[in-house]
Length: 302
Length: 321
Image 1: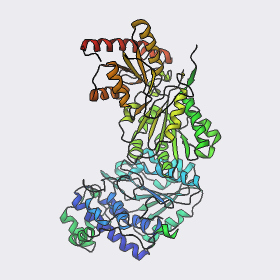
Image 2: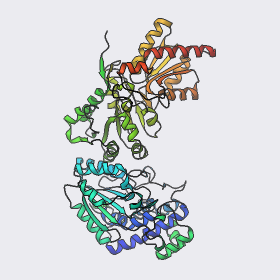
Image 3: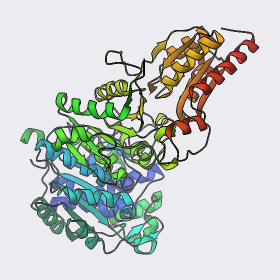
Image 4: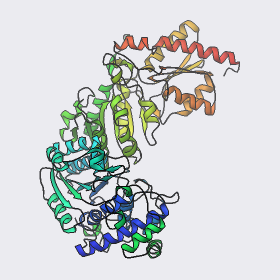
């Protein structure tokens, strides 16, 4: 089992930069959508798709794949950028995000978009699905790993804790939770809206192994994913401490950027900070009409 | 001849145990109600493929969804009131929107649940489940039909909801009665009136038909509408054409259930008077099953009464059949 790209840390940094450019650029024609969370999760997401996960974008349902579930459905800009950059569909599709004639729904739809395992958008559901996939994979003796990608805000949902309880109960060491702990949600700071701390202690009490990392430090992220893989007898959750709007100075740590897109002008400013222009990156996406397949898909390696 | 009495949920339990033998992909989950939902037969024989999920139905519903993604055919069981109401968001977004192969066994449907009272008397599942795209809904009438329906939905792709009752109920079919998912069954021939029922109301409908034959010289056709979605529209249209008036009978709220579904079909294709026996927009209460069915108007006598009204309406309209 191997990731089809297996990028080095230096390459991951470059890929994460491109993902951030995708996010900003696709949100402009969409005229709605989420900006802050996708930027905060870009580094963890890039590490997953370009180093950690086993998959074959030519065959999204390939039996040997790992499974990952986007419990926080609303971060579709980073989700779809990662899928497009990883080759599940052409990057030009990103410019049809949230539009009637595109396949990229505002919140992910598995029947519309290749690489989306399950539809999501109502928060707090992904961890339970991951528990089911982990139980099923273990029953089959399948070595795949299961990842539940969650936000910090959705830790307020009761269903998360039902799921956490069952994962601990069933000692699902093939399961890894990742939480984008950016401390911000739509109405304000998480601790002001409905405090979730001490989150690490909560998961430990639910019989999980907990790792805390700087979610913008690739070495730490890689180390945590490795540690999770080698942790036996219990599930692991990685609390990735991140910053909402990471990478764009005027969005940095501002919860106001949770649920709104940049205007064209704001996008220009943001893209300048990310080393490109709107026209340049828009043109790059618009002309990427073929899926960017990896050189060695995992299906071939396996 | 005395009528044999048996629980529908026992048919579910026996079918699952049988499926365990014949289909290695079938797995079963339960929310702390293994004996109540009778999945304990499966649990005893196939402990590896049985998952006790505790008192956490929302999680159970989505764990089942996750299992389906690994090629399993998960059946999860709890009381219908929890399956359809507490898990609704999970069923809507994860299972139905993604069209996953999840089977839901909802026990303790209807007012006949009895002494547990209103919280446990599921009377809304048809309305809720029928409204979800991709969802299929079955409400078998007795032990044998529940067994056959359970076996059948394991073979059908996509989300299915199966409604069962709590009590021993009359056995009106037998091991050899045909069961075809999505295809209603004519239990009694007749051309004066058609009674369309599901669940335990099929037995009440047969009783009502006997009374109508004896006292009114009315030969009522009795249709067992075990599948509520997809609905056998053809058999409803045929009944409306042949008989000119219909009575529906269900152990469910009046809004959004079998009666509403039948009325929709007749309104579309062949409008005729439709009378309904159902729970009339109220919550239930504690009591013996039989006294509750009488008190809330879901007995054969109520069907007879509605049948007479439907016939009067039909004749008053003057257009007959």
